[in-house]
Length: 124
Image (tube, rainbow, N blue to C red; front, side):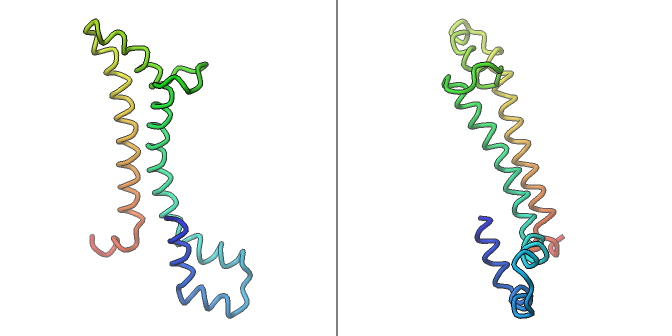
């Protein structure tokens, strides 16, 4: 997605004008391309945080993750045998924590997209 944003920005007339005027590649990147794709990078980073949390919890739940540190996935994994004894509340806390963290980062990414997307600025 970032690559497509860079290619779209690179095709803009002001970037082509900078190339024709002899601007160096680092100057074109820092002055024209990077400021225009920064909102895309910020939004994708916040959305990837939720994905990373979910991936880490899944790996830890399966027992493949780091064993030295307590994680939400390990907490869920250790509570599966307790579920048979009707202690559902023990698995609820890490499960709800994972859900709220992933949901929170996704909502943050969505809100940042709404604020930073120039196509949506005029519609408010």
